[in-house]
Figure 1 (cartoon, rainbow, N blue to C red):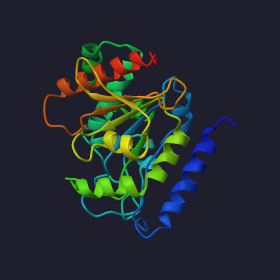
Figure 2: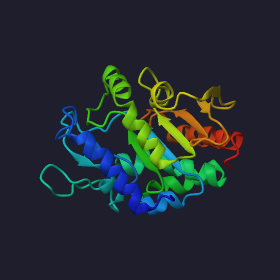
Figure 3: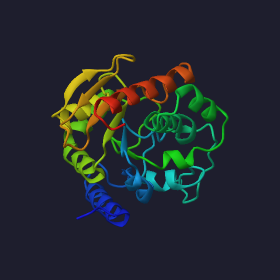
Length: 253
């Protein structure tokens, strides 16, 4: 049966509703996934970003990321039931948004210097951010600094739910954002997508995994985290180069 936007969201909700009934997530589940399914399913190359955990300033509560990202100014609904104001320099627009922008340019074959100039002109990156799917390894809000042991524990304990999400979204490319012991890509390689052949890109030396030509995904790449402290251009080019090389090697571009 062909997956439709309505079916995708319904299946997401079924998965999240089951998690919400467990003690770990009760009243604190962060519902991630596909904010705009009709746009995601229409992509020639479907991309899934994987992060460690949402930053809720150490005070987790039940929240729907899909609603936040779908909002034209990335305004989440707070504890008081009202939309919170967000700056264009915030997480979804300026950081995750930069990765989304760079990935789009890489897959479209737009030169990175030209694409980056468009990005730094400012404005809202709502359209490009909504092309993709987003999964948190740990679906309970953390603080500004993640605790690696907690992320790793969630990856192992809830591998089944993470596998269900990947199977549902049928991405061609998975991008794990972050390095270190709790690298989302490494945790996925251990618990969710164990059948990949580990490789390295030639220019950026990014670790990546290649899967069977008939598999979904075809590849998974370990990238830096969007909050990496350094030159924005360096980070933008690194993402562009890593994604472009891998996409070419597995014949996605």
